[in-house]
Image (cartoon, rainbow, N blue to C red; front, side):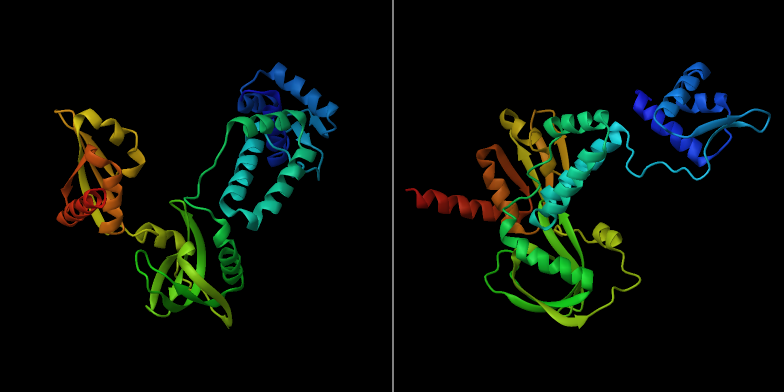
Length: 317
């Protein structure tokens, strides 16, 4: 334990958990000497924390009966963790929880001691999370608000959905179980009456949504975490193997988050694999690397890249 504030808070928690603790036991828990422990006890007394001691084989240090640690006493690291979590709520949820996030931070600022406030000020300047969305979330905020309400009130919705790369839309009655943020997008997961199965839909592809007066119950055996583990929100349908030329292998190394695997070859080239929802998505990623990369498989992606490359050349002739 590296600082006085952390040790004092930990000491209070130890005393609250069990009365009549020996000085030696407490000192070992805190990693300090018995002499230092008595100094910390004096500090607690000066802070108004009611600590007393009893002599004898069954005696030791205790908190006055009924005393409880205040609910907002944090170590500096805990205070930063609360701040970072609140900041992520603002970044991910945007307008839906922005006021609540700012209000929580304002309350923290009013009640925390100077040491914790200084730590949060440092975190504001140096620990930043941004760019979690792949697109502007302003347009989907009204849909998100309705879906949040529908999941909270367990109300069915009627939605119009446009699947990826398809101009036509479908109308579905849907029971929304959970909102999930992943891969920079929002998804709603639940039961689709059209397909009579669990489904996930990307929120920004919902063209229209209406809350119905019909209610539903989430099945007792439905586990959102198990569903996500076995049914990723972007279900990979195409596995692609690529070869990066030796002189341009840095492009592969600098984009490791895109690849499932990355293998450096003796000739200096790099082989990677990636998974994508469909051939068109995979082909567009391949083309973004230009002549640096060669498609090894599947053949469908290779032919799509060739076709698009020819069309691009013809377009600029």
